[in-house]
Structure formats: structure tokens, C-alpha cells
Length: 248
Image 1: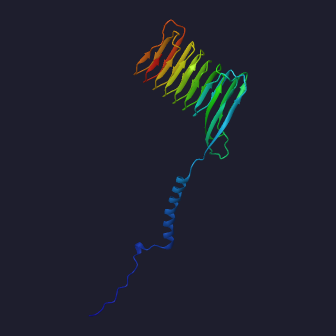
Image 2: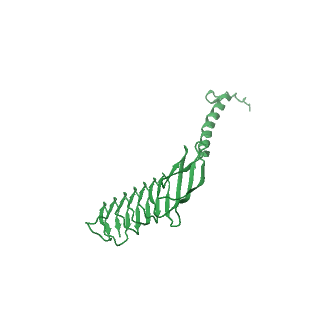
């Protein structure tokens, strides 16, 4: 038996890979992987701080100019001034942002305004006020809560509810969207106005004062239980859509 020599195997040109080409493939794979890791590990730095709010009296009117933040105002008969806090949260894009709530006082009017200092911030405000003050609040995408205030109230938000209780005889205006409004009164305002959309409205009067109920809603019923007189100068004006209205 004869043994044949093993044939010489030549490299196949189509699969020959040079060192330079191999490094190029590795680099091409490594770059996307590195980019993905950077996105996954990146985060926005969230910071919090609490600011004290304090204004000596006399304060007769409080104005709050806020956005994306909750506002809570409570009447306290032991106070002639205003005190409370603002809980601040922000994303420090600039790295040196110092958000705050500015306080301006003149002729008995205290104005609180959010200053985000070039950052994206929230300032949830919670203050105690003399119960006789008038209140004006503007915010957005966050709730408004007012309790035990006898002066006029003017409350505006969007996409969040408004709740007011133990209000006095000052006229009341409450506007929001896509959220409910609830208000109760121990006094008898001449005018109560509430407007929203896609949510219900509940108004509770003092149970004695005669009102002309001017109510507009769609796709829902109204439940009007309060003392009424179409000739009354006292008016409750309620507008909503796709939800009911209750007045007691």
C-alpha cells in the first residue's frame, strides 16, 4: 500500500482577514456599544430645598404666581402676616441653578412668584394667612387648596382640581380644565363662578341665601338642591362638560 502525500492547502482569498481589517471591525462594534452605555448611564440631577416664607403684617391680599406646582392657603385667625414654606425641586441643567420663590410686599399686598433661575423647577407653596385676606392664585397642572378665607378668591389652574372650603362672603372665581371643582361656603358671596371641562362641579352654599343658579353642562345632569330664586341678585354660575353639577 502506497501512501499519498498530503496536498498543500492554500488560503482562500475571500476569507483572508488582515490585522488592520480585524481592528476596524472591532472598532466599529465598540463605538455603538459605548454610545449606548452613555445614554443608559446618563441622568438629570434632581435637587430639593425648602424655603421659608415669612411676611409681617398687615397683609390684606395674597397673590401667588406659580406653575406646575401645588398651592395651599389656609386662613389662621391668630395671624396678621403670612408664614409658611415652599418645597423646591429642580433639574440642575446648568449646574449652578438656585430656584426660589420671590416675595414682594407693598401696601398690604404680598406677591409670591416662582423663579427657576434658568432651570426646570417646581415650587409647592403652603402658607398660612389672616382669614380676612383676598386671595389670587395662578398655577398650572397642579391643584389649588384654599381653606377658611372670607375675602374674595380668584383661583386659576389647568388639568388639576380646585378645592376650597369654609369660604366667606367674598366673591369667588374658580377656573380649571379637565379636573373637578369643589367649594363650600359659610358666607354668602354675591357671585360664585366655577368653570371647568370633563369633570364635575360641587358647590355647597350656606343653605340660607337665595341664589339664581345659572348652570351649563353637557352629557350629564344637574342636581340643584340649594334655596333658589331666579330674581335674586346672588348668582351661582357654573360651566362644565361631560360631567354633573351639584349645588346644595
